[in-house]
Image (cartoon, rainbow, N blue to C red; front, side):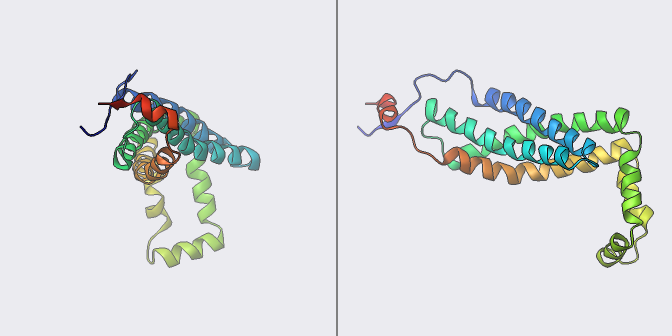
Length: 189
């Protein structure tokens, strides 16, 4: 009979792990978002937000690698990608809720005003004219005119980034083999 690798003990099903990791990633992304929003005038605060956001991608991949090593040694790349993707989609939903709360109750139109001031700078106005000829500034600022529209736009970006970041986390999850003595624990004859 051939070797069949089966996990001895799975403490949580994969869906529950995705939800828990999604909650952790959402907390990290929300902290990153808030650091970026409040760090518009502070270089170090905005860099901290960037670091927290990038760290979450590695953290999720590392945790799924630990899950693979302890519970599911035959986890394929496509399954690791699926786990990372579900985790990031959960995180996207929760982060979008935090972003809506921020724009609805804390921002007070500062984000829209800063975008409007940025588009009044001649360099940005020229770049805008080259990117979308004939478009008016008001038309380009329309998706950012209300908290719901801002959140909807950010939700689409979050979803797109989830598909891309899941690839990176899945690569992290698949790198690093199983310890030699651990392969014997999953041997079933």
